[in-house]
Image 1 (cartoon, rainbow, N blue to C red):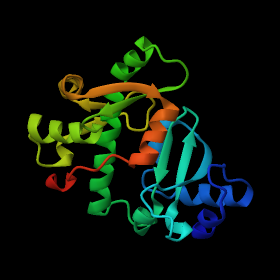
Image 2: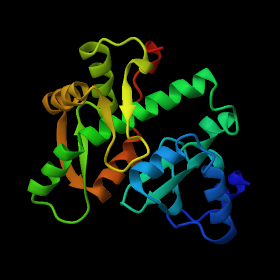
Image 3: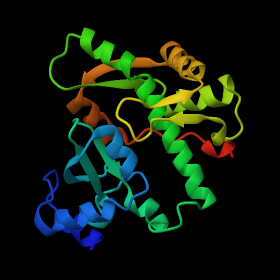
Image 4: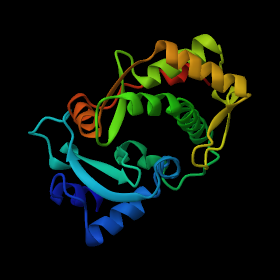
Length: 218
């Protein structure tokens, strides 16, 4: 059913009717769904877009990506094929626990640096909805180096995260770890303010940022 919806959808237009209802119900099983909603608010639309990394001679079910648009203006792509093997599985399986820990760490890390991003947007000369882009080195790479080199942790469970299900309260404990991450990111990141449309266009062309080798943490 999801393949049929992706294949038949009009590119760039929100899903409607039964297709929207089915896609919404299906994606709510996704392991990252709750975290995305906690960060961005309620989903407002589900849109099928072209995946620039898939050549045009491939089937449409490979070319078409599922994007969810949220009430705070954010957009997230859901590669449901990658994660559907975990749908409905025991949430206490070790691999799911580990992936959940990593998601929570990323979520808190983004919230801790949000004041810096908001300040940059406020002081820029651009107007309209804005984003802050990590130029030269992606956000996840900077976070990876912080955990590996600065904190020298070996296990994701060594990082305590609070406020995952709250808006604007996600932190590392102790607070000194949150501050250390803020300072490290401020020193290491090359940040560029751009419009949300330009930021989305950048990732449409270049794809999502590559994932570091998180397997080094057990």
